[in-house]
Length: 246
Image 1 (cartoon, rainbow, N blue to C red):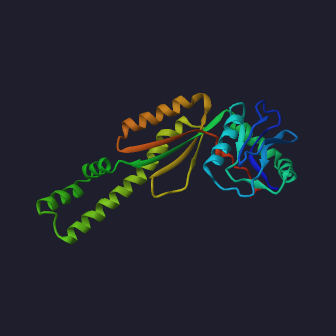
Image 2: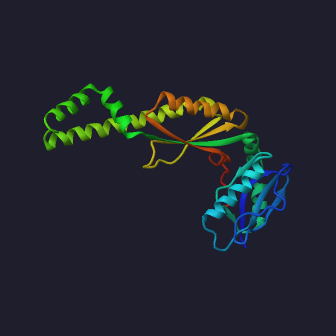
Image 3: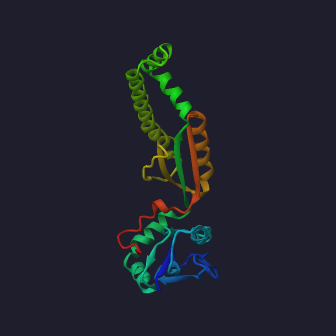
């Protein structure tokens, strides 16, 4: 049976799970494998492991419970190893790396910020900042919308201006929030947002980071900001080449 890995902690971690249940139906018991100064929080992996909502929540709950008492390197949902012995071997082989990561992430949490545009607000702003574009729009309105070619030209110009604004606003989101964070990680691009950025934040100064988000909302009202956190610092684990794979 494969071993499911929730995370890695120090063997002296004061809050490692005891009697806790994790993923699976019925839920599988969570246990701890220790190797030297490190410990892996693991359980038996279900044969039909899939990202079901109950299992995603169980994975998150195990990490939240353990992370509340000390530093934990969270593994992403679905991290597997062939067996317990393989996990212990990885802990031994990568001990120095994991111990350094635990020291770095101790007392830190992750906040993920996704930014999008309020379409009407950013269109108004683009026109206000671009006299040529505004003049073309006004001229088109006076001519009943203008010819097909004029409409096409105006549409392309507006699209290009909005895209340029998306790029500059993504830079602005990072610039405004980075000073309140310990580290920054840029997430994958997507069609639903102009910025997807994770911030590593000291747990004790999280209020300061959230205040910076509120300030950004006030100064850039055309931006819509979604904040997820505090989260285990998934984006900053950097487990190295010997991460248990599944």
